[in-house]
Amino acid sequence: MTKKVTKTTFQAPLNFDEKWEELLENKDFIKVFLSDVLENYIIKQRWYGGKSSVLKYIELAEYFRIQKEGEVYYGLILEVNFIEAFYQHYFLPIAFVSDENFAKDDRILPISIQNQEGFIIDAINLEAFRKVVFERILTAVPKDKTRVRYHRSEIFTGCRYESSRYMGMEQSNTSIVYNEKYVLKFFRRIYADRNPDYEMSRFLSDKKDFKNTPAYLGSIQIKDSDNTNITIGLMQEMVENQGDAWEYMLKELHKVFSNLEYKSIKISELPRTEDFGRLGIRDVPPQIIDWVGLNVFTKIQTLAKRTAEMHIALGSEFEDTSFTPTHFNGDYTVWLKNRLLYQFQNRLNAVENNLHKLDGLALELAHEFLEKKNIIRKRFVNFDWTKLKGERIRVHGDYHLGQVLVKDDDFYILDFEGEPESTIRDRKVKQPPLKDIAGLFRSFHYAIYATIFNNINLYKQEQEQLFEAGEILYQYLNNVFLETYISKVQEANLNIGYNQERIFLLKYAILEKAVYELGYELNSRPQWAVIPLKGISNIINN
Image (cartoon, rainbow, N blue to C red; front, side, top):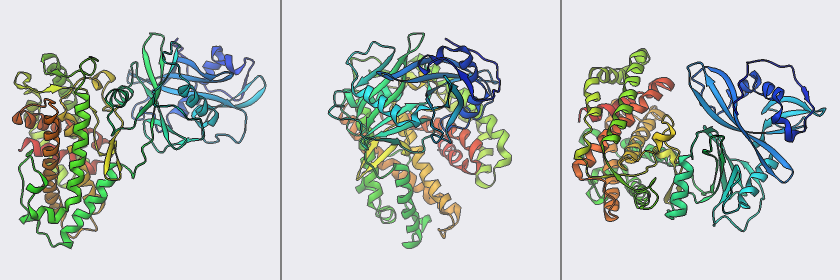
């Protein structure tokens, strides 16, 4: 049901004689709605992911009713087409309001319906809409065969609607807090398939009873005109927390770097440890414990334990083929190499085009990156699956400290949508669990350097000395994590390969992740490009 329109600007308000419940059947309304007015509205939204491209026109790919009895709202799937010859789909629920005082900053289109003037707005602004959605999930039947399919978990019972509010400043989705107990995430960027966040959250919570992720409560799916399931909403419990692990680590690491002066620690005399070794806390040298303290290392152990438990749950399925573990093979290897070589070439071009934005160590490392491009490319090509004995499973896919909530002395893992740049199909490819570990290690590296950058005027040491201390700390954090993680997964018989295989996969995945990060930093904040460049340098010079 795709309707293409020519870009036109209209004087508002235009009057339509149809009832609101029939308005989407009116071609003139569609033409007005899909005009420049909608384009101007969408490009200003935080959830709009096409800001770096040039919008060409918008089509209405699908529409459906979200209703309860006589209360009707519309859900739209908009196809945003770009001059660069690609498109994206977005979910936009709409409502008509006639109150002049309502949603002053979030109006899409002024119109008149049967001589009543008002505005089309994003329905999520309306409490009445939010209540309808909540009640439709709460009263969902076990096997919904309608076009808009609401699902309710068995544990989501015995409550009623009390209140709702926006959760916060999300980038790609919109979350609503209900009754201060539940969170409904509306997916704004839509894919012609079930969303991985829905699949993974429901699997871990419902099927595997994994406690350290928000419990799955319900969802909203629609069947499109091609009979494909599309996820538009995911309902989960709200986990009371003290913030995410990224902010937590920044605070803890600031204490660590402040200790350099407070405890008169000589960085050059700090003992080193090997890359990708395994260390219990008792094996960490006393000088390092004196500098860093026990708290950071015990928290790293807890995070390693929860990460291992997540992977054990994801690797223990033998009925649902989309979650059963599998071995490495030639098809996976071809997919991996093609993907990474394409990405690597893209990053090479980005570095060459942005050298003028870099200086100091970042510029030095960028030149090294370009000089050693053939070595890096060879690293990616030298993926010999025949030597790998471990298994691949569904993984988090975008695992970093920002995807982890801190609750007291524990951690909760969330947001299983996968890597934003990847296609929905690529996000569901089974990967070695160590790919998630590589993502987390890169996040440790980022947290260390972010701490240095954010507090450089507070520390007495030169930046190069701080970088040196940071690299030492990074190795200890990784090795303490690995000891707990590897012990835990091996106890559960999750096959992550033999020691040399694990080191190979970690280096490979860290290199991949750092190359991926390089594109974002060069485009968004070149002064931070030193972080992925240093990560790449560490791997290729090891």
